Amino acid sequence: MSKLHDESLFGQISRIFFEALSVQEAANTALTLLKESLCLHRIIYISTYTGVPTVLAYAGGQDMTLEFIEQIFSNSHDSLRPLLKLKHPVFIQNYPNHEAALYEFVQSGSESVALIPFEGGTQIESGLLTFHRSEHCESWDADMERLLDGVSQLIFMGIQRLYYFEEHERLLYTDEMTGCLNRRAFMRDMEAHMKSKDLFCLTMIDLDDFKLINDSYGHLAGDQVLRQLTSCLIKKLPSSYQIYRLGGDEFAIFHPYTEVESEIVMNQINNYLDHGCEGNLTRPINLSAGCSNSSEANFDMDHLITMADRRMYEMKRSYKTRRGRIL
Image (cartoon, rainbow, N blue to C red):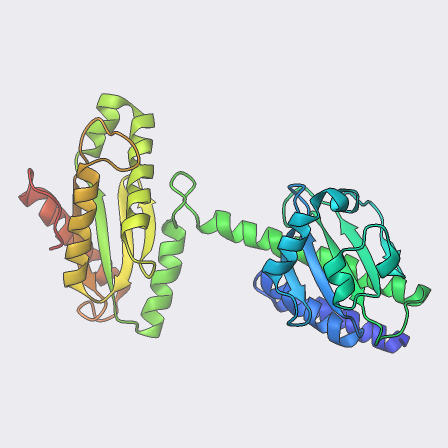
């Protein structure tokens, strides 16, 4: 392979990891590019962080699937253990006759296999890239081995960059206590919905007498209640609903424009909370909630929030002994 081609390949891989939004997307795209550019039979990106090989990305023929490869690794775990602890690249030219060769790969045409390890402190950073050559491609020489090692290191660096970017995004937009989205994510998504003129509902939720829970049972009990409420919302609401903790005991939910459905779901949640939610609560939890939609707010963010908030507090003032309903 020419030096010019090598530089072009490295440039394409760099661009893939620069433009990708996720580790999974970048890894799959990069592996597919390498398979086609270097006449490879298959490439497998394996995480070895837990000591059990997990396939995170795969480029190869339809004769094998990601799940099938994981099953092969699971059945051959003992024989694979030394390979999962590699510190340096290993190139196996005559793979069918190698002592650690896996029958399924030999049968599917793997003539040579390169194992390039990488090591880091997280699941996504500790792993192995395996390159497979079939008899239809030229044997690997020293230049090809150096090229495989080089592109592997480039992929590893790209994976690390994307992993930390994803982790930063997760921490930036996740509420630490409950694990749901936070106020920053709420404002980001609200602005996006308004710009696109999406028709949606905003429901604001507030726990009734939450201060009494903190005062009577302590803040740890209050934190437990918030986590239980979040778990309840996630379990009871459709996956299309986005849940945010805005702070304290105040939550917000984006959902499709169906107020009747919202009332039914909220009543289900209250019924679930009355009977306990992932544990025995010392006292029942009641909710106050108010709903508004983007159309009646004329797609004005402040107006939408104000209407939902006002309706929530109207409920809180008017029904001291009731179960929550959407106003």
